[in-house]
Amino acid sequence: MQITRRKFVAQSTAAGAGMVIGFRLSPPFVLAQESDKAKKKAPPNPFDAYIHIKPDGKISLVVAKSEMGQGIKTGLAMILAEEAEVDFSSVSVEQAETRPDIYAHMGTGGSGSTMENFMPLRRAGATVRECMIMAAAAQWNVPKKECEARKGSVVHQKSSRHASYGELVQAASKLPLPDPEKVELKDEADFSLIGHATPRVDIPAKVNGSAQFGIDVRVPDMLFAVVARCPTFGGKATRFDAARAKAVAGVRDVFEIPALARDVLSAGGVVVVADSTWSAIKGREALEVAWDHGAAVSESSDAMHEALREAARKPGKRVRNDGDVDAAISHGVKKVEAVYELPLLAHATMEPMNITVHARGTDAEVWAPTQSPDWVQGTVAQVLGLKPEKVVVHTTLMGGGFGRRYMADFPAEAAQIAKMVSKPVQLVWSREDDMTHDFYRPASCHRMLGAVDANGRPLAWSHTLTSTSIRGY
Image (cartoon, rainbow, N blue to C red; front, side):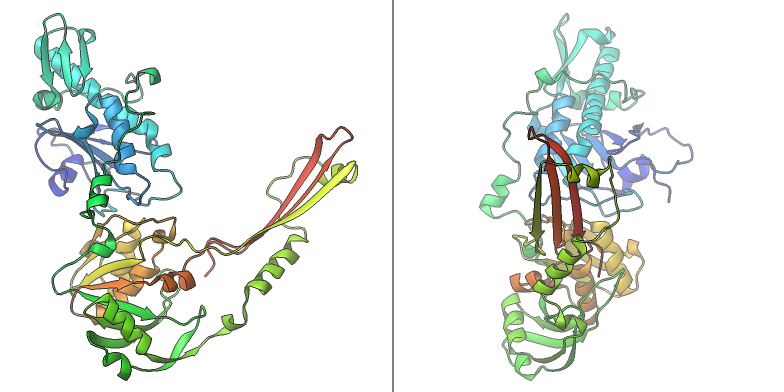
């Protein structure tokens, strides 16, 4: 699908008067200008982020990155404000719509939001600054080099003239954009924001309770659900009696959902839907369920670690091999061997896992604390039998992610439940649910061998790693 910046402005939250600059937060860095006179055929969308400079001087940075406590709504705004030469308070970071046709990649993970976007954002901010200087110089008919940007305004000292970015934005929108690769960046010694203490913009809302996390979502006629899952992976219910669960005050319904595998993941189980999370949990406690624990019932931590240790004693695939390690170790004066083990580790997000889905038959709406809103959109669409564009996903704040909220199991479960319920439903995982059904950090065993010479200098180092699969199901 071809997307121009005009279409983005018309369809997104960044729509409105002013100037919009589209750019990429990943190479190649490309900028393009929105022009009211542009009538040419739209090229494929080259952008994955947008800057909207408004007539009041405020600047919005629209990015497909999720805020999960790492502080990007502050950090990314600091980078842009620094190079654009505007007050930090005038810049806001907005969550992009879940539109894979506009944003090629919407995932947030790998601790890369600031590191990967640092230079692209600096160039984008410098482009904003340069555009405003160019507009002022043209308006005053003075050399550009005599103009200087200061705190959201351009000044011409010789004539004592000055104009705010808001006053210049319309004129700037009609000028050709400078080459972002050649635009002059500020000297790091002149930074007033980057590298300096700056209060996080989300602290007040988190302190006074107005910040909306996924678990805070409330919509009209909403119900709440929990799932009784088999204690072992791959297991399933053989029978259940819902009578006692349905007798709990507030419980609306009890039904089973099947396990889903591979692309759309769900452990399956018995669902309890109620007027509140508390009622749903109490209803689940009253359930009588018989489980077929499956093949995994024989697995144990001890057996897993012994298998990893045994594998670490054998030759494996060599991913790096510099020199003859075996020969060097055999000639060492002193040899050292150590084995390090790491267990499976739950991510243990501070905010319990949750998601709210309203399936309306022909479309759906989702409120998700997620690191991958496009994956949520595709998963919910697949479960409900809809086209992805028929699923609107609102990305909320997250009380921690750590990769756990990159997965699609909780959206799949919620979609299965919403398909059976005619109202919006919020699925909540208890702490115990997540500890027993997380996508864990893999368990691993590291066998280390080393040797030193007579002077104590290292001769060789051998590192054999065995691990459970990070992608295995």
